[in-house]
Image 1 (cartoon, rainbow, N blue to C red):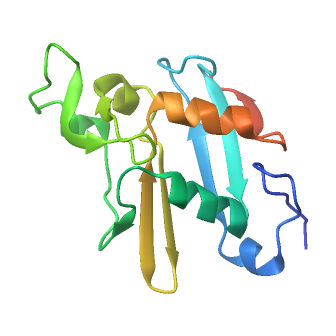
Image 2 (cartoon, one colour; image 1 turned 180 degrees about the horizontal axis):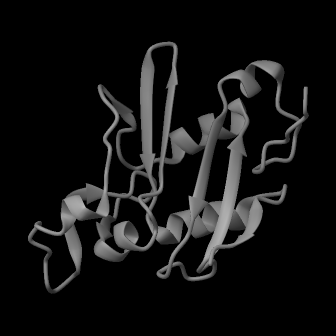
Length: 145
């Protein structure tokens, strides 16, 4: 079996962590402060994922995962003063997501189910930039065309 490391702390993932991986594959569009057009694959070990959950400002447990598509938000009334989408927040920092987070960041959401508990973490571009920058093991896969 191929060996993988947690991108956050760098430790080798345990066999049970590989069977049900906590990971996100993302193609970042424009709107990222530091990672425009980059592709990343980030894996979390159980300890780092627990720390991520503990740091979230919004509740992460959900009864059902949400499937979000930027087309779903074309009809929403966006606040013209803040560019914020109504009722949609970055789970990590608690800030309202702006339209660019959905249109250009391809809905960065980490959806994990373990022991019948569903956790969904939605990232704004700033928080996802911070996750990438905190990686000890390289997550960069290249640029998209």
